[in-house]
Image 1 (cartoon, rainbow, N blue to C red):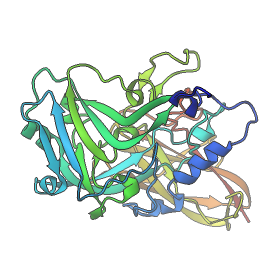
Image 2 (cartoon, helix red, strand yellow):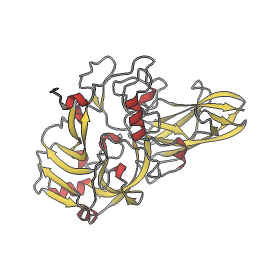
Image 3 (spheres, one colour):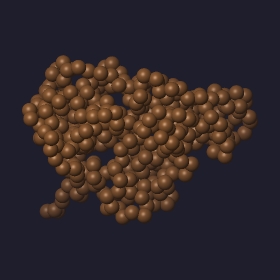
Image 4 (cartoon, rainbow, N blue to C red):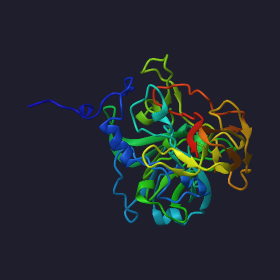
Length: 377
């Protein structure tokens, strides 16, 4: 009898060969995990069915009636909370823009073989739930705790490693200390005023404002406080920046907060197959959204000539939603011919989108400026 193991279920990470097209496996991933249709940038809050979805394994059968959240490890009082107990705690609503860390991966060359995102792996929702720090305070985090590990109900194999989906945050960030990267972390049970849809983590998920989507653990069933850095697959193997000159097994740098990005809602109307946009001559109002996990976007620039020259667009201030994208608008005087429109964002820390994308092995954090081919006739 043939001897097999779980490692035979998946292939190692690789990049596509020159000229290699999207594989059947990548196409299957793309069919399961959909992006935001960019015309939906018109909505300040993304309807749940248009919000991007990435499911690593299967959508688990996690019903609200028999679901419980365990809080254990280095706590004074271990907890086991059902959904009713969580809903009885004080809740808040945060409008949060969430983006997949692999957004734009399929535009890299060579292409890291994985979920083949173009630019639509993003969405903004009103997430309602219990601030994580309230639950941790009820459990009583012991002083030696260093990190909080979050375990989802989704289970699978990735690069030969069988696993539940797990990620961690530093205790200070998880507990909401200060006003930095972890403040606003939610145990969310509601999306846009309704119970979470199954694909978005029903009945409970983590929401970590400002961080890429891998940190927002879905179908959350356990929080474990530990006294050492968590070294699970999704923390120490996946979701690391590894440059081309680094060995594939190098530790790299962790993927954390969202790099600045601006996207344009497609102008005019499209060709069915190529998606090339068609506009008529004259003034064309352009609009879209911009965001950054490092702070407010302070400038959006537009180019109508493929990035050779740039003009500033009008950017709305963040207003009452510090973790949500910002609207931008400008007017382009279209003349007959072929054009490439581009936009780029700069945040308050001076981070801006590159015109040429630095490459990394996982295809993470690719915030190359958007380029939109347009035919004016």
